[in-house]
Length: 109
Picture 1 (spheres, rainbow, N blue to C red):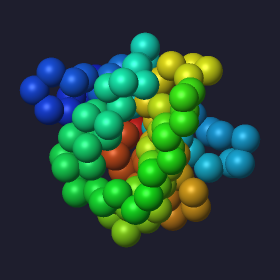
Picture 2 (tube, helix red, strand yellow):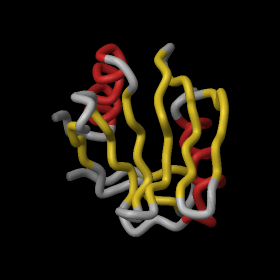
Picture 3 (cartoon, rainbow, N blue to C red):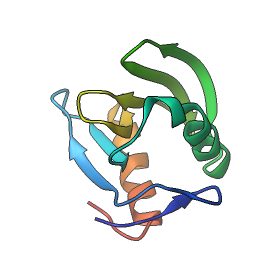
Picture 4 (cartoon, one colour):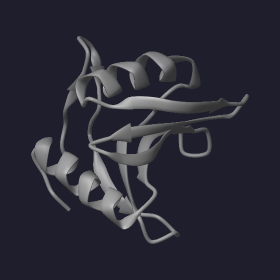
């Protein structure tokens, strides 16, 4: 686990890397997250890490944005079931970026 922040008061951590059912990696960015704060959090996260928003899908329970960071596409999401924000790799090359981001925060997988 490690801590990092986005913006002035929006903490990312404690963060951790998890393997998804797909086999790719997901970086859990914040626990006890809220649907209402996702757009501000996501925008600040993308600005901090040089990401770009490609598309967004917001429902009453989930928010899933397709984003590009370091040339790879990810899902940046709020999951109501777990109440957390996560950055999920869509490819093996995305896994490399997840591990690099985790290392940048001070801890690798």
